[in-house]
Image (cartoon, rainbow, N blue to C red; front, side, top):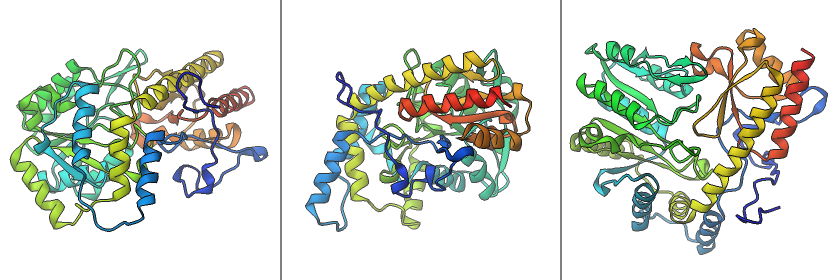
Length: 395
């Protein structure tokens, strides 16, 4: 039933198995036949904003799906969103299209580093960062985050030491951070930016979770730190996570440096990745133009789900929550169970009915942890937590 105040219904339990959704494609069942809590893939189980669905329906009703140019309103909607929501004025001339953020990261690696170059990452971090670096013949340079009294921080001394190496030429930044949920402060980003600028390390910033922050934690777009830092960065944006439209949208890179922007434009043309999808364009523009009330309601709902998890885990004393500043992904610390990575995943899958992403997927620093998606109806989350508590009692 829709919320009386917002008109949005996030409690509706939608069966995602009727479409080939990645999250539930195996149609798993846990012990006793119960449906598994599918919390591994990072998307929401909520319908997209009504304004998006309505815009896509109007485009569908038009019935002609020939080649299309980009609507003039799309870039305007993007710029207005970031100006009004995040106080960032984006130069229209700095915006380039990309099929998705991972493509943008891979293109940046290919164009702006050489084979064998070092690329800094800050694990535990999004697992595709590892794959992109390996598959392009570059070297992972690890600058692990430090866990200090339940909160992750950057190791700036370690970063400075790594950045001094002339063969270390790029840093992948996750801002906000997946999976630990940190929304980096402006001061933290300025410190990182100064180190990278000093040592000529290009920052490629994945900011797909930027809109998903909780009260008291403001997302700072990296390129908003100042002109010099903007020129030393490629900022990757997409509304995919914000509005739950990952399968029907694309991405954008903000490239202030003219030479790098020209190189990316030329590569996009050479590889023919600069075509348009009518539904993606319509979905993104409608989301940025009218999706703010829906997003605000989602964030409020997620905050309630977070509180539910906190209350449940407080009763166990066996699992610790790394409290997030944002995102709909929780980083849970299961190290007190003293189970190896494979055994932990098996325990969660077979005993608790949880299908999550094992922490070891995010680097060795994630061993003993798991990433859990809480963007789901509250009743489903409540049932999942009860199953976990029962499994912990009888392990």
